[in-house]
Image (cartoon, rainbow, N blue to C red; front, side, top):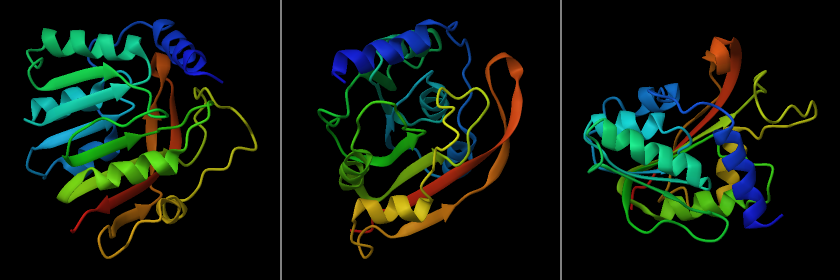
Length: 208
Protein backbone atom coordinates (compact mmCIF):
# COMPACT_ATOMS: atom_id res chain seq x y z
CA UNK A 1 0.00 0.00 0.00
CA UNK A 2 1.30 3.45 -0.88
CA UNK A 3 1.54 6.57 1.24
CA UNK A 4 -1.42 7.94 -0.72
CA UNK A 5 -3.52 4.92 0.31
CA UNK A 6 -2.67 5.41 3.98
CA UNK A 7 -3.35 9.15 3.86
CA UNK A 8 -6.67 8.57 2.11
CA UNK A 9 -7.71 5.94 4.68
CA UNK A 10 -6.97 8.10 7.73
CA UNK A 11 -8.24 11.30 6.13
CA UNK A 12 -11.47 9.49 5.36
CA UNK A 13 -11.75 8.22 8.93
CA UNK A 14 -11.40 11.71 10.42
CA UNK A 15 -13.44 13.52 7.76
CA UNK A 16 -16.35 11.10 8.23
CA UNK A 17 -16.94 12.27 11.81
CA UNK A 18 -17.55 15.76 13.15
CA UNK A 19 -14.50 17.62 14.42
CA UNK A 20 -14.29 17.30 18.20
CA UNK A 21 -14.64 20.70 19.86
CA UNK A 22 -12.86 19.68 23.07
CA UNK A 23 -11.16 16.28 22.63
CA UNK A 24 -10.13 14.58 25.85
CA UNK A 25 -6.59 13.50 26.66
CA UNK A 26 -5.78 9.82 26.95
CA UNK A 27 -6.09 8.55 30.51
CA UNK A 28 -2.62 6.96 30.57
CA UNK A 29 -1.05 10.24 29.49
CA UNK A 30 -2.74 12.15 32.30
CA UNK A 31 -1.63 9.70 34.98
CA UNK A 32 1.93 9.58 33.63
CA UNK A 33 2.54 13.27 32.99
CA UNK A 34 0.51 15.04 35.68
CA UNK A 35 3.51 15.49 38.02
CA UNK A 36 6.22 16.04 35.40
CA UNK A 37 7.65 19.52 34.76
CA UNK A 38 6.72 20.81 31.29
CA UNK A 39 9.25 20.63 28.49
CA UNK A 40 9.34 19.59 24.84
CA UNK A 41 7.00 16.77 23.82
CA UNK A 42 6.45 14.87 20.59
CA UNK A 43 2.98 13.40 20.02
CA UNK A 44 3.16 10.59 17.44
CA UNK A 45 -0.21 10.04 15.80
CA UNK A 46 -1.96 13.04 17.37
CA UNK A 47 -5.43 12.18 16.03
CA UNK A 48 -8.10 14.56 17.34
CA UNK A 49 -5.48 16.39 19.40
CA UNK A 50 -6.74 15.81 22.93
CA UNK A 51 -3.27 14.97 24.23
CA UNK A 52 -1.57 17.89 22.49
CA UNK A 53 -4.10 20.42 23.77
CA UNK A 54 -3.97 19.06 27.33
CA UNK A 55 -0.18 19.18 27.34
CA UNK A 56 -0.04 22.69 25.91
CA UNK A 57 -2.44 23.96 28.58
CA UNK A 58 0.12 22.78 31.12
CA UNK A 59 2.97 24.61 29.45
CA UNK A 60 4.44 21.87 27.29
CA UNK A 61 5.82 22.80 23.87
CA UNK A 62 4.16 20.27 21.58
CA UNK A 63 5.22 18.87 18.24
CA UNK A 64 2.20 16.90 17.02
CA UNK A 65 2.26 14.74 13.91
CA UNK A 66 -0.25 12.53 12.13
CA UNK A 67 -0.31 10.93 8.71
CA UNK A 68 -3.70 12.58 8.14
CA UNK A 69 -3.59 16.21 6.97
CA UNK A 70 -7.23 16.49 8.11
CA UNK A 71 -6.22 15.61 11.68
CA UNK A 72 -3.25 18.01 11.67
CA UNK A 73 -5.26 20.88 10.20
CA UNK A 74 -8.08 20.41 12.70
CA UNK A 75 -5.64 20.42 15.60
CA UNK A 76 -3.97 23.59 14.30
CA UNK A 77 -7.37 25.30 14.18
CA UNK A 78 -8.30 24.15 17.69
CA UNK A 79 -4.95 25.29 19.08
CA UNK A 80 -5.36 28.77 17.60
CA UNK A 81 -8.95 29.04 18.80
CA UNK A 82 -7.85 28.19 22.35
CA UNK A 83 -4.88 30.57 22.36
CA UNK A 84 -2.39 27.70 22.23
CA UNK A 85 -1.09 28.26 18.71
CA UNK A 86 2.36 29.27 19.94
CA UNK A 87 2.73 26.01 21.91
CA UNK A 88 1.48 23.48 19.35
CA UNK A 89 3.12 22.76 16.01
CA UNK A 90 0.87 20.25 14.22
CA UNK A 91 1.81 18.85 10.83
CA UNK A 92 1.09 15.83 8.61
CA UNK A 93 3.97 13.36 8.73
CA UNK A 94 4.45 9.81 7.44
CA UNK A 95 6.53 7.94 10.00
CA UNK A 96 7.19 5.19 7.45
CA UNK A 97 9.38 7.66 5.57
CA UNK A 98 10.98 9.96 8.14
CA UNK A 99 10.95 11.04 11.78
CA UNK A 100 10.38 14.56 13.16
CA UNK A 101 13.55 16.46 14.02
CA UNK A 102 14.41 17.61 17.52
CA UNK A 103 15.14 16.38 21.04
CA UNK A 104 12.34 15.82 23.49
CA UNK A 105 11.63 15.37 27.20
CA UNK A 106 8.60 13.22 26.44
CA UNK A 107 7.49 11.27 23.39
CA UNK A 108 3.99 9.79 23.32
CA UNK A 109 2.70 7.07 21.02
CA UNK A 110 -0.91 6.27 21.85
CA UNK A 111 -2.52 3.45 19.88
CA UNK A 112 -0.06 3.77 17.01
CA UNK A 113 -1.71 0.91 15.10
CA UNK A 114 -2.48 0.94 11.40
CA UNK A 115 -3.76 -1.49 8.75
CA UNK A 116 -0.87 -0.33 6.55
CA UNK A 117 2.72 -1.47 6.63
CA UNK A 118 4.66 0.26 9.43
CA UNK A 119 7.87 -0.84 11.14
CA UNK A 120 6.66 0.24 14.56
CA UNK A 121 9.74 -1.05 16.35
CA UNK A 122 11.97 1.09 14.14
CA UNK A 123 9.79 4.16 14.77
CA UNK A 124 9.79 3.65 18.53
CA UNK A 125 13.52 2.90 18.57
CA UNK A 126 14.16 6.17 16.76
CA UNK A 127 11.89 7.89 19.28
CA UNK A 128 13.92 6.52 22.18
CA UNK A 129 17.08 7.94 20.62
CA UNK A 130 15.35 11.34 20.23
CA UNK A 131 14.86 11.64 23.99
CA UNK A 132 16.96 13.95 26.10
CA UNK A 133 18.61 12.35 29.15
CA UNK A 134 15.88 11.87 31.73
CA UNK A 135 13.20 11.90 29.04
CA UNK A 136 10.49 9.27 28.70
CA UNK A 137 8.92 7.34 25.85
CA UNK A 138 5.29 6.51 26.64
CA UNK A 139 3.78 3.78 24.46
CA UNK A 140 0.13 2.91 25.03
CA UNK A 141 -1.27 0.11 22.89
CA UNK A 142 -4.57 -1.68 22.69
CA UNK A 143 -4.66 -4.80 24.81
CA UNK A 144 -8.21 -5.63 23.73
CA UNK A 145 -10.60 -4.73 20.93
CA UNK A 146 -13.11 -1.97 21.65
CA UNK A 147 -16.53 -2.33 20.00
CA UNK A 148 -15.90 0.84 17.97
CA UNK A 149 -12.37 -0.01 16.82
CA UNK A 150 -11.64 0.01 13.09
CA UNK A 151 -9.93 -3.36 13.63
CA UNK A 152 -12.50 -6.01 14.53
CA UNK A 153 -10.31 -9.01 13.63
CA UNK A 154 -11.30 -11.73 16.15
CA UNK A 155 -7.83 -13.27 15.78
CA UNK A 156 -5.96 -10.05 16.54
CA UNK A 157 -3.15 -10.54 19.04
CA UNK A 158 -1.79 -7.61 20.98
CA UNK A 159 1.88 -7.88 22.03
CA UNK A 160 2.52 -7.35 25.73
CA UNK A 161 4.45 -4.25 26.88
CA UNK A 162 7.48 -6.43 27.64
CA UNK A 163 7.34 -7.90 24.14
CA UNK A 164 7.18 -4.40 22.66
CA UNK A 165 10.16 -3.36 24.79
CA UNK A 166 12.15 -6.42 23.71
CA UNK A 167 11.41 -5.66 20.07
CA UNK A 168 13.04 -2.24 20.39
CA UNK A 169 16.43 -3.78 21.08
CA UNK A 170 17.49 -0.92 23.37
CA UNK A 171 20.35 -1.17 25.88
CA UNK A 172 18.57 -1.43 29.26
CA UNK A 173 21.48 0.35 30.92
CA UNK A 174 20.67 3.47 28.90
CA UNK A 175 16.92 2.97 28.36
CA UNK A 176 15.51 1.14 31.39
CA UNK A 177 11.87 0.10 31.42
CA UNK A 178 10.05 2.21 34.01
CA UNK A 179 6.60 0.68 33.56
CA UNK A 180 5.17 -2.32 31.73
CA UNK A 181 1.66 -3.40 32.65
CA UNK A 182 -1.86 -3.98 31.35
CA UNK A 183 -4.42 -1.98 33.33
CA UNK A 184 -8.15 -2.01 32.61
CA UNK A 185 -10.43 1.01 32.33
CA UNK A 186 -13.89 1.99 31.15
CA UNK A 187 -13.53 3.77 27.81
CA UNK A 188 -16.04 6.01 26.04
CA UNK A 189 -16.33 5.73 22.28
CA UNK A 190 -18.32 7.49 19.58
CA UNK A 191 -21.84 8.43 20.55
CA UNK A 192 -21.08 8.01 24.25
CA UNK A 193 -20.87 4.22 24.06
CA UNK A 194 -18.81 2.69 26.88
CA UNK A 195 -16.88 -0.56 27.25
CA UNK A 196 -14.17 -2.04 29.45
CA UNK A 197 -10.86 -2.14 27.61
CA UNK A 198 -7.30 -3.19 28.36
CA UNK A 199 -4.35 -0.87 27.77
CA UNK A 200 -0.81 -2.10 27.28
CA UNK A 201 1.40 0.55 28.86
CA UNK A 202 5.15 0.82 28.37
CA UNK A 203 7.36 3.63 29.67
CA UNK A 204 11.05 3.69 28.77
CA UNK A 205 13.30 6.32 30.37
CA UNK A 206 16.55 7.52 28.85
CA UNK A 207 19.27 7.66 31.49
CA UNK A 208 22.26 8.55 29.34
